[in-house]
Length: 371
Length: 137
Image (cartoon, rainbow over all chains, first blue to last red; front, side):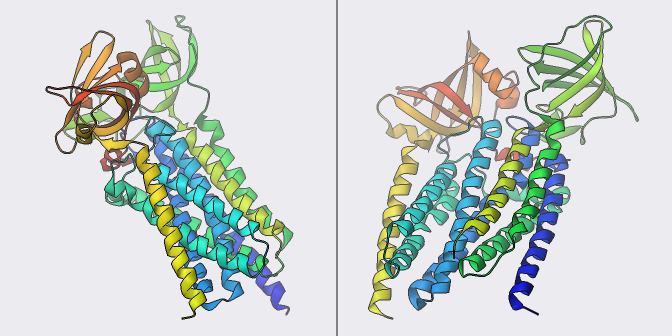
């Protein structure tokens, strides 16, 4: 059997397997991924970005570390394949780095309170992306085919300093980014530990596979045109939760006409548990929608569990700060809710789409790049 | 090892140091610092500082927040009450005590109980504490 055909077949099979795994775990993460029951700012569901953004960041570090090793190998041994290998991983690492920066900034807008905050790691990642962008300029600007690989690999080795720099900054400077030890408690919790490491493994494996495919393309191996099709599954999956996501729904005005049915979306700005029995709970909620705050009474199963959570020495209701859709009837000046649906913050499917488009772009580059 | 290889590695090291120095300088120029570090600032300027809320009071349309740094330096942050509610989606109360906060605004040094006063333009909140809370899902 033709070896080229076998290689191509294997690559496509592996990519399809990992894309399917990626799509499955991504869907679980963005629709029902565990989040902290209480957060200091913004919607708690925005923390589902933990299953998208963190993976992109770690994957960027890994891809560019592999590129560094190959670049050093080229400088020492002068094997052209090592230069191609490093180049393929830098392309992939650069794309993932841009996505990590974009997804982090979008998440920061909700959970930190600002898209751009001059946070040391956020700024460090931006510098990393800019420094690696110059790599492509350096590589293309040298015409001499003997000099270009050497200079570009020297630059690639030098550019790597931005990786440890961006990683250690939250440890040596005040930062909004948490450290690894701070996130360990959450990530190590039983309901999180099933999903978080699995997402990490799948995203890293798929990125390395795509970078290897890019390398094979650079050394002249044929890659089937339909390599762009599997990542389209990721794009479609990232679009699925849009129907249950709070995009533009928090600026609604509700007419409080006695007896009228209402349906609106807002933020829980205050929550009290009035009473609880074995099978029924009564909540009094203040929901902010647009400029108004509506008082909502809800009796039934709690929309989120656990109902209460300890924050330091205080007990708070986990419904607080969530984006919710209320369906109910106006009765006695307040809204008697029949149902409460907790919505995912818009930044989560947005960032999932950014991730999916990154994978798709990398696959497209595999096809377009000339050996 | 060939001299060409050594030259390449040396060039990479020099270039790496240059990139490191430029990047680090640019990142620190962003001005993100601990509240206690404000002691080194002698003139009014824009700052972004991080610390913990140890007290608050309402003064007309403003909320005065006392923020303490890691080395014990304190600053009075003056923020619009309305802006605080819009950002936090909650009315200020005892729950804010002990919360970590980062604020961007115009710093005016002064003598006395506080290192100075910050007229807050932007409130930022680190997510460190959120990861200590029980997960739900």
